[in-house]
Length: 215
Image (tube, rainbow, N blue to C red):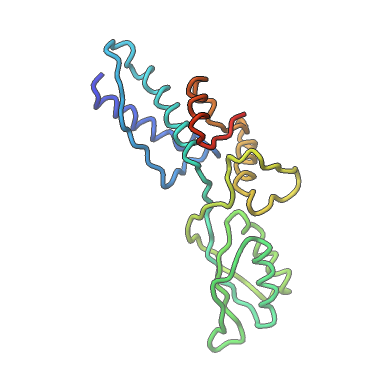
């Protein structure tokens, strides 16, 4: 197998790699794998695709987990129109759903105010109903996808204790999202780097004090 063939196999592996970590989602952003060096065995039997792909997969998995990955969530842009006496209710509903206001002001030629803000997509379900309830049906909104944003917290922090049927604190959301998503998809909740290293490598990494949590 030539080195170019090896690079082709490695690229194919990376293409399917993004759906195999954390939440089993096909979206993998701001991640770059740099192939620094590779040693290929002289015997053809030991440098086939069946030998390279499992090894490369372990390398990608472990390097990704060591690099302190973070979850990202989609964010909606909001435009809400409501009377002046409903502004406090609009602010309250947004705050309860991790949303915040960017600007507000009167709409020319009408008694309404226009409020523009942002809200995480996962917290937007039922938002319009909640908004109408708190404003007696006087407010209405439009929601459009705006950008992706890093979810607060570390998804790999095993010191976080999540209680069932209770909302997670803001700094525990990434861990909460990852655990619940993997549980719903029937995946193991244990995401740790020690699955992809042998014992000598784990001991060497522990000596270097990389700050990696091991079970």
